[in-house]
Length: 314
Image (cartoon, rainbow, N blue to C red):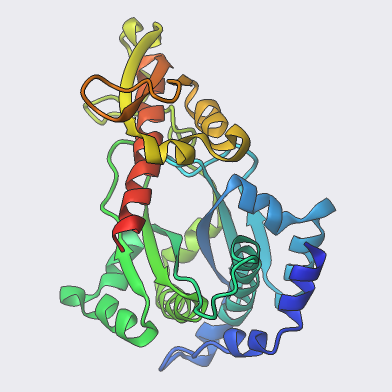
């Protein structure tokens, strides 16, 4: 693993990637103002970014000059089993740090591939809902210019009302590393112009009543705990998941299903091979717990499956 990391740092490609195009017309003081960017990584990827004894994250901070923070273990972005990374500093420092992190993760994911074509991956940025309008622009003009300028795919998720207190949306950037970095440059430069955006720097991982995926707000959207005691009783729901997607739900060594169970508070059991839902080739996934725990676990499982289906269609 050490050789993989050092080979990236000394790679002749590295300077080219980190010399991302600057915003077309930034004020010089804007470039120096401290700002930040947040994005999601899996729990396993977070460990890779931290490194043994914190060596990797310390090295990345030293190389870039940016500050890199991660949400704590099992503190996930609502509705996912992904942790949040926040990188703060000047725009140039942020770009260097994000490039180092993404290149590190790419080198580990695709270290055994010999194909010369750079893989296209998805990077999910966390952006306050109030700042998304600046990225979209009038009639979608800004986001269209960002897509054209970076050659990356950029999609902004709709506001999720399932989680009380969640005021952030996900901006998904799809492309190879160069394309993603150009898009991040454009997006962060635009966000840094918004005076309200920097206010979130003081509470980068704060999701009141929504941090853990089990903390659903009630149907009327008023927040708080469910008043109906039936919510806390143990229930059981069985859903069908395509046999080809079961591996994604389980994860390597059972890691993913364990994380979903811990984040939601539900118990999850998957039927044996060949034991399908009646009339289908879908495996049975039985979720047991309170109603809100079941809803949380089901949401995360279906999100994993939907993401896999989306990638298969690309």
